Length: 396
Image (tube, helix red, strand yellow):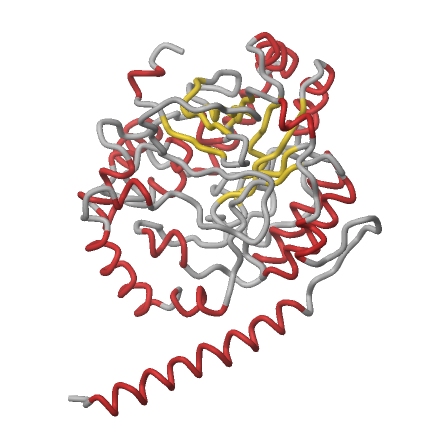
């Protein structure tokens, strides 16, 4: 066995490897930072941090977020246990057996999951791409004007649409080619049509983008937090994600840019992207789910290291309250508002700026929806959210 001296040497070697690796990784990634605009904002953290919170956002009290895509066709997820329950009780299958209908594409890869059983019974051997085609056929029944009217009548000040979720399907005719699923996008401009309808009624329009997860670049089943946060992605994904978000900014100028589950480049490239966004949309806002890639994250993504991470997390999340806290995004160098999930409050508090609801779009075709989760933003720019129980939204 190693003595104290041996352990010290090992620790020094590991620290040196991580230090040199992080320096080399950051230098290589920073060299790829490019801006495409000129204006008051530059590719530095200090510059993007100077962006003021716009008045419209401070005064907006209520908004609607839409999760809508091929997963809306089956509209299925197991019920009865929360995601926190799954992390505590069945960590090894927490992601494939969670109560998230939007995770359908990944859940059917686990043959023992309730979603896979439902899929076999309902769709037989059809794949997720077949559901995308059914989603597209159902678009004949979709009326963006009716949706926008319903949102306006509800009192919403803004609407955020899921432009691309983790399933990788794009809701606009993107010109950025996905090498693993070249035609996996809508040929109808769903983003553009809804943007026009929403803005015509005086509301702001934003876009959600799953930057941290895209299962078309990671075909293996994702079952644990280690898989979800650190699973290896095919080469070229950072460039693909950045190109798609730039396309969304240039084409639709979203008033809110809502990233999710992390960002696949380093901080300097992200600074350039956010500076371009603010130069293009000066009164736009970005959320806080931009935890960037790093050499350390790549190390954790290695199979044996990820396995160790999962063993540790399995023990940690068994502690009371730990599973409920795991979905709160970590602090990032810059954001315009915070978005912790599953947050409960013992007392009421003033919520000056705004409220956002994230619907889970449900049934058999593209034109229907049901509301699932709510998010609030307090005067200190903290954006709090929680998900309702199925019984709270039944019949909506």
